[in-house]
Length: 116
Image (cartoon, rainbow, N blue to C red; front, side, top):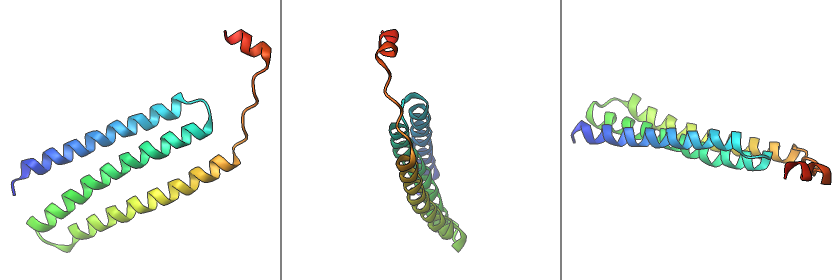
């Protein structure tokens, strides 16, 4: 197996991760309430983390097959464990934040007229 297809795959995965990370940041800054912000941050952030993890796994498995050595296989397994932990802990944190968030008061009629 040649190296350039792997490099192309890694570049695509990492660029897609940067894109989803950007979407996550824009969603956190753009949406008005905490629930929509946490939903966007959770979904796009997990996708970005999963893409970075996939790039790490591809590299680890390729290096394990070509160079040998258990450190590359351990790297791939550690990347999988990291993804699982990030998903679980992110899900727990989002649930806690959404349950404890106080809803914003509804604007009065005067404030609604001022917006228009």
